[in-house]
Image 1 (cartoon, rainbow, N blue to C red):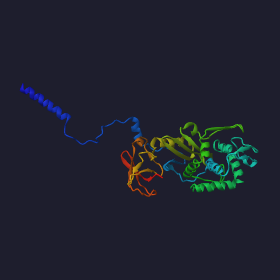
Image 2 (tube, rainbow, N blue to C red):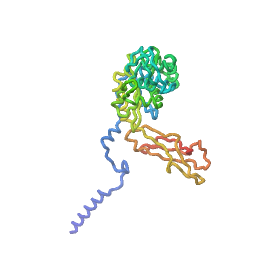
Image 3 (cartoon, rainbow, N blue to C red):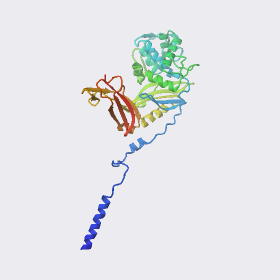
Image 4 (cartoon, one colour):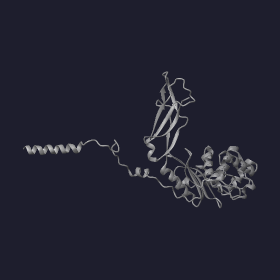
Length: 367
């Protein structure tokens, strides 16, 4: 009987040791969690695509970050990307409802929309011809009417390009057909697209895949096939000549972020552009931090008064898509003085990603 009791005691003591042994260090105090295949794929680095265009650039227009580039400062023929500047100069110098008469010298180049001498068209209609089917005769009509002559108008285009920082760009005509002295770069065309898309009328036109005008009985489709096939595409322009090859500036807006790509000298501009855009949406997402007016974004100063705080501008950062949910913000107030100078920061917003501090942004009193 005694032996049996000893065996039972030993058995129970063994179980006690198995379940409640001495404490040991582990990798984390948190229980291990399994990852889904989607999360694992999202964490993996994706190699840059094999883009065959002679020059290209991929930009996040929200932050201005250049994510991929090749020969982005190499001078190349601009082709019909020229018409981005043609359109903006026209919008800056003439009313949309202005009626313009086409002339014989305008139709010396082939017109894809069948423009004829002596037609009466509004500038708005002409801009659709210019930017959707990329009509060359339309470019000459606009330049002649607004500039008095094409040379004057092209001079304005070059002035505008210089003001936008397009230091490696020079235009020789308004339509972009090959001509000595005309050149641009992928970097400069990214600038052109960025500034042009700030114009609401321009942005409205280039995001349309097709249009029709009853007055002239004309209908047209955009040459930018991404508008039909790549979700979120909002512009902007194609171009093709012998010297330039196939060119495309593309802008895509999705809830996860915005991507701007430029390809020059491509054999297939749509394939090259899609590879660049896919690279962005596979690897990056925009994470935004702001301090809107609410009860969280205020504090009591030394005099017992509530003071509202804010950022001068929202902060947007590019992160891995899987990291968006791990963004946290901490508001640190450094001055509680009742007479704090509103032009000076009152504290900082500390932004952490996955628990690591990645950015600090000054906090100001809300005016």
